[in-house]
Each structure stands twice: as C-alpha cells, then as structure tokens.
Image 1 (cartoon, rainbow, N blue to C red):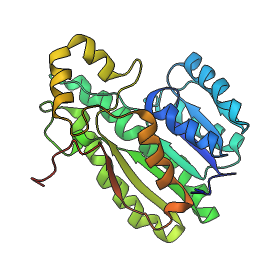
Image 2: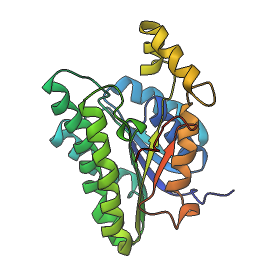
Image 3: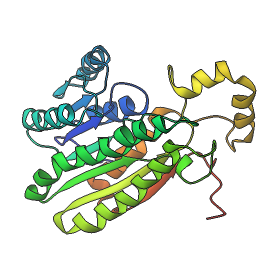
Image 4: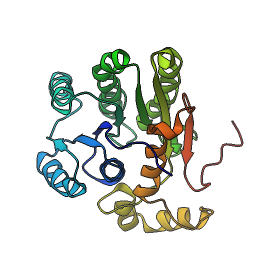
Length: 253
C-alpha cells in the first residue's frame, strides 16, 4: 500500500532510539523530510546520520522537553528549518516509578506537557494549511492498574482523552489526531531488556502469559503509527489503537 507519505514533513520528538527511532526511520524510508530530537545530543546526531541514508532531508539536535523555554525554541526553529510540519509524533517519556512525588512532577513535565507544548507549536501552521496529522503515544498500562499506583500510567491515560478532545476540536481544520498505545516492547537498551537482567523471573512470567509468547518490536509499533499518520488513514480521527499482540485484558472496561 502506498501510504502517501512522500514529500511530507514530520517531527518525531524522542526519535533517537527505540520506538521513536523506528517511527522516524519509517517516515524517512517512506520519503518524508524529517526532524528528530532527544535529550542526548550525540545520540541525536548519530540517528540523524543513519536516517539520511534514505535520501530525504533529516535534521535534529538534542533538547530536554521538560525545559519549557528550550523546547519551545527548538520546536519553532525546527518548524522553520523544515518548512512546516505535516506530521507530529511526540514519543518522549519519563517512564514509570512508584513511591515518590518526584515521579509525578517528572512524568507530568515530560509525558504530558511535552506533547502539549509540541502540539501547541505546530497547531497554528497546520490550521493555516488546512491539514495535519498528530499521533500521540499512550501505553497499555493506561488501561490496567498495572504495577501499582504510579504517575506514568495515570498521566499517559490523560493523553488518550486529550487526543480525543483535539480530534473533535480540530477535525474541521483538516487536522487528525489519533493515539497509539503499545504493549510491552523490547529493544536494545530499553526498559524490558534491563528488566530481563534485573528481574528475570518476572520477565519470564510475562512472556509465558503473552498470547504470542514474546514482546513487541519497535518496528511493529512504528508501522501502526505510520499508517495513522498517513493520508491512507484519512477517516481515522480520534482513534485509540492498542498494539500489544493481544496481551492487554480490557474485558473489565
């Protein structure tokens, strides 16, 4: 299927590794001009160099999304250098943690205000052009009381509602907003790889419970994001797509 992405301009916030990098790679492979960022400037530079092999314009630099002023400046400068933004995918996350209020502040700054500020930076331009696509990244942990009371689950859940609100408010402007919630995804240097070493019994117990006997791969999430972001998904707006291989039990909702 031709997704119709060639020539589009995409920004992936948190696109230097894992799921974010796979999303950025899919866009580059499909012919999008692209901008990425992450906290580690060296990691961003390496990823930009790798992504340029697909022959499109790829730019990027390090930025901490929890620094409101710095992130606003990065988004504005990137939008100008890229020549606008057709597709926005904010991926950055502060991950999970229990037992301390500091996690709430950190997750709010990164998981909630990061996407909110990114969207605020591109919304006017998308509205003026009469088109745009935003894909928010949730988590299946937002659908279950997984891992005990914690900021990550609760605040990621807020993005699902926010995405729907945006979709209803800006559909008239030609802007589509959808949410993808991945289940457990394993990649080199990721949380699940670390848990495999630190909590092997817990890791193995989840693998045994999974219908497909494995965790997901970043590229499996990226393909779903790419579809929803593309003109091929023109009638998808306000959707929430769970991508977990059937792992999440939502029967009690």
